[in-house]
Image (cartoon, rainbow, N blue to C red; front, side):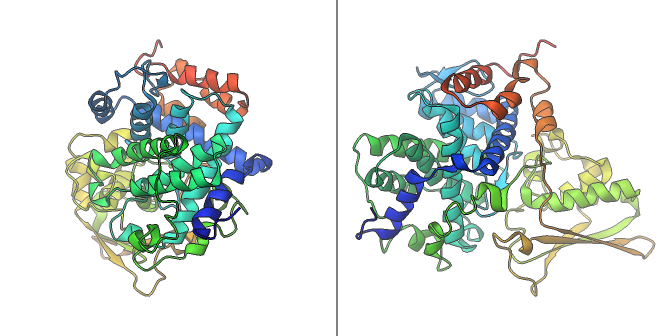
Length: 452
């Protein structure tokens, strides 16, 4: 029953807890594919320097049964949600969703996996709750409009807290009132600034959101109170975060018809760098295959629609972490090396041979084009290249490149470690509670140990 006191929050809560994505095979298949992709990123990210620092700092030695992905350690569920969310995002190789304008899976799945340490449920239940959590994140993203992100918030963090809480509420079949409170508790912890892009703190946002979402759902279930009207209150979520661009009806409009994981769907990254740089990466690789030499180039100009390069906050990176957010460097690496690898974007200083070309690149915006939005038709990049002989080359990319099958990405990201070889096939077929236990056991192994 929808509350007359807080009709929108209540309707949102009702949609979350009453959803049944198990009836949609397209949604379930997309979810299984996304989980494989996320696990590839998280297992690879488990060995990152910052993942280790975070684990040690927040107390991964605390007692508990929640697994740390790519590690043989177990810990407290809230710690596991935080560390695993960070690990999944630390390489910036995880999926992205246009409606969220961020990364949903690296927040929601760590929260659900951590919750499995304290509540038994089936693999089917995990998958369905993941689809619902993503739906909640995406619908909120659509309702906020573009200014939330452009004014400096990192939507993975700000929407992820609520998406994770929604997933747990769906899983536990919480009441409408309990769910509304859980969502409000998550919303009051909604934070994360884009100014952290290119630093250790960006992936921390994903872990922070996973932990906060799980904590919010647990608190509400235990009877901890909070405002039950975060979407209806005059000083609620839209008032604070939308900057006048809100469309509140989008929160429940066409809920699950189709599921957001199906349409517009997730983009699984082909390259380990910021999603907004992927079109120039594909163009650079294509020009490499055409035989274009860097020495022949005088100048490069990238043309974006307004707002499309908001995430690309670096033009002159000092190291590979910063380079993830530099289309100039990404294009240079793609053109010169003909591929983009994890080692292009590690903590070492940027390569002078790549920076020499990156310094010859600049950006502009086509102010006559529609501002980039959640509509993928508003995303494009044009690359204009002036050659030293006076001739010119132009290439255009519309939308985003991506992977349809992360199987090879999983093998590469896990260094073909046989300890994890059965994970993708298990995720594709798992349904029962024992299946989920088997998956957790496989993931709770040390990624650094490879007997081959």
